[in-house]
Amino acid sequence: MSEECKEELVKEALNAIRGALLAYLKVSCKKSLRIIRLTGQKRLRVDFYGLFNYYDPTDNFPRFMDAYSYAVKCVGQEKVNEVLEGEVIEGGDTGHQIAIPSERYEELCKQLGEA
Image 1 (cartoon, one colour):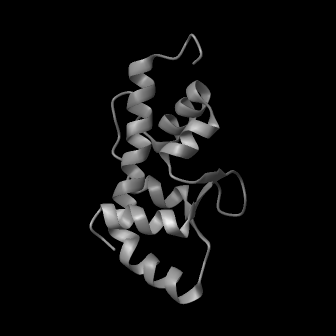
Image 2 (cartoon, one colour):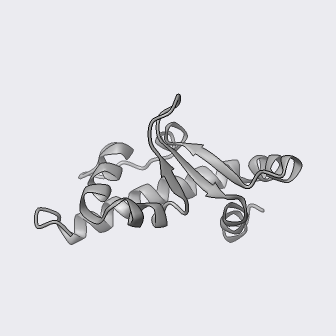
């Protein structure tokens, strides 16, 4: 971890971005799982834009991208990918996305009681 990064802020940032993902899943699981099962998709892509609406701002990180950028800077993309349960794909037509394996997506939905 970088010297300018504070452990408590890293934890806050990671919890905030994870919280946005879980809030998003709570709302979208049933519909997304139906689509995955019908199409046989191997992974599901979630736009960061979709997570913005479910992000709960903190005093230190008022926007999702503030928390995300801080976390990547402090612990690296690999750790952030683990927290977000997939691989972050940067850029593209709609901006950043998380590519979550379909099996993992279904497991998360089951954990949330939404499968």
